[in-house]
Length: 212
Image (cartoon, rainbow, N blue to C red):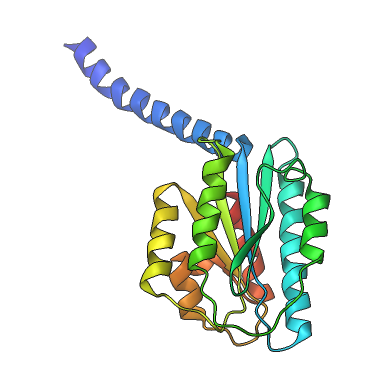
């Protein structure tokens, strides 16, 4: 009888310990496992050149941050510019995709262009193909949508592309340097306000979420 009571007391503790160990192991695997990052950069003409330069600086800071916190981690990057049509500037399978300095060089070449109506839907679809091409099923997957923050839309095609990315485990983050962006639409892309980086007050929370 005493043995039964002892078992009933110990078993829940053993179960809890196993669950905690599994959670810790999962966290370690996420922090050290492969990471694929795709930057979708909106190059539609911003309100002014200063805003676009700030946008580039934000992207470069993110690359450096990921490099600093992921010294022992295998990270591959892709850069997709979208204007009238999305264009892959740096494929995720490029030999330069794992070299942060080279990725920064690609970002520095970006310039704002004449304003066109554009939707990130096709850019999101192209990003999905980059993740599929990487063939790293166990990798964590991030998209950083660098948007002008104004010409946002949540049309059916965009929502479908976003939902397809969620199905393959992609986390979508958004940044903008526009002073008065359409914040509800940006949150609509990411589904989480903590995944949107507008002002410096957002920075720490945004960076913390990228680590998860």
